[in-house]
Amino acid sequence: MALVSAKEILENARDGHYAVPAININNLEWTKAVLSTAQEMNSPILVAVSEGAGKYMTGYKTVVGMVKGMMEEMNITVPVALHLDHGSFEGAKEALAAGFTSVMFDGSHLAIDENLEKTREIVAIAHAQGASVEAEVGSIGGEEDGIIGTGELADPQECKTMADTGIDFLAAGIGNIHGKYPENWVGLSFETLDAIKQATGSIPLVLHGGSGIPEDQIKKAIDLGVSKINVNTELQLVNAAALRDFIVAGKDLEGKNYDPRKLLAPGFEAMKEAVKEKIEIFGSANKA
Image (cartoon, rainbow, N blue to C red; front, side):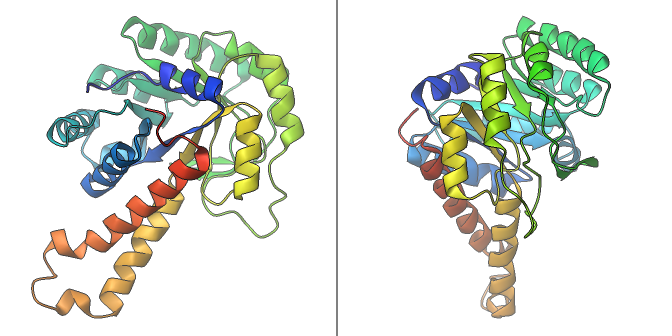
């Protein structure tokens, strides 16, 4: 199956009252773990790539080639969108030119008028080639590729203005953060989320910082219109933990376990389990 836009994936999730995971990838193991688990769970999926990860993998063309090739070789039949996460203005254009089928233009650090203007330009470019666009209002807490937010609450009227630019789905700050959640985190603001939903109507909403949010809050957010939930840190943590356990136990010294295909296998399996868990919690299993 060819890569698809995320628009229909998320509209189906909105109508079906579930959310689709957007899992950030960093290399071949990440990509294989995400695609194979989505196929096994019969779940639509967004394969997300930050600008930093894109550079690490040598560029967007490399990422597109890897994802497309892997989908063909593995006979992936579930809907898959290749999505740029927290893209800059130029980064979003580069990703679209390389063949990404969905992009997030993150202009949340800009003045609202400039954010709106640049978002409209990205929408025009993306829609001309059948790709989808995500935008953000109210910066998400934590750090993502150098962009730092404090977990602010988005203004519902600004969200409506952004939705009116023609974007396909909207990320809005509701107290969520990237990375690990601190012990004093007060939780998601469902009052803000409900107000954003009332202001923006039918546009699918996006929850960033999905690693570490309690399951009951995840499910309530989905009930209030969240159709896409981003997961990144959690896979990094389980992968690192599995690799650490393997080496600390001295298993890398056994036989030919220094072979990267064996050395990296525990992390790969741990990531698959994490993706499976998210698909089950978000409710997207058997929705492909």
